[in-house]
Length: 393
Ligand SMILES: *Cc1c(COP(=O)(O)O)cnc(C)c1O
Image (cartoon, rainbow, N blue to C red; front, side, top):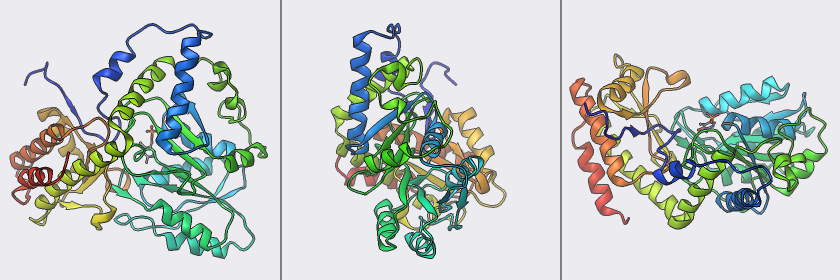
């Protein structure tokens, strides 16, 4: 096996980092007062608003997505507060654990891991909350474990139908700049993203978008926080905005990634994700026809444009399969998470990708299926190619 050829990274985060982004980080740091850095950082905050489609504020943290969760939890809530966090998979579960560790009471009605969030569950829970104890609904747009995207406008509609004042806080970590999202138009109060997914950056930056309503509410909350505090981070001075030295290189990378997004255009980026996801899912549908491998997402319309979770049959260890594809074929996939550990693998198809990269990944997975005699329907690759041929670039 050539060790100089490119490795294929097809996990749903981290994702392939474009060479332009890598190169943008290969440089000296600025001194903290350099106006060039101030301009660069301010332009990142400004352009991220466009990605979230919000007029609200965006805060950036030198942290991963979990830090973004913590930023939202610590600013909006105090111990003893109650939140509604419908359980749609591994990531909503982890977020719930995080919230409980903050002393929050988390209502997490159990969902079906093979279906999207049911907005009726939200409406019913809010209607039962006559005392108005629920401070917020916390929803995950795309659960990266299940490969399912939920309908966020329908969650907003459920809150409104119940006439409940709860905030809507959405984890868009796996979906921002991949699936459609419009924070202001959809009535989302807080949204949380991270750099290493469709934003095409290195791991280590969380972006949290906050509308005026959420910011005003946060200002009245006495919860213990300092590093995460939106009030301090609203100041212009970068040392305050980042509560210390800014993660300059992460911002150099982000600046380049935002330029790349702007050059392609956000709508085109979203259309590209739909097209490539269609190719992956056409292949998986062909594999599934042999009755062994299966989509986790039962409803085609709920399948994510970022990641496809494939369930493996009895006797096929999804984790071992994932490892073999990486170790023998140089394609890195995701394994099954949570309850699906060992019984699934996940193909990430978000971020800096084009059709040849996706075809390379699918062909390699198919090669491994054949080598390991894992039953699968024929014509998987052909289905992907036909999907691509039938759709506009
Ligand atoms: C990746 C991911 C997270 C966690 O992000 P980290 O950067 O690993 O902390 C949270 N939620 C979703 C939906 C994700 O895809």
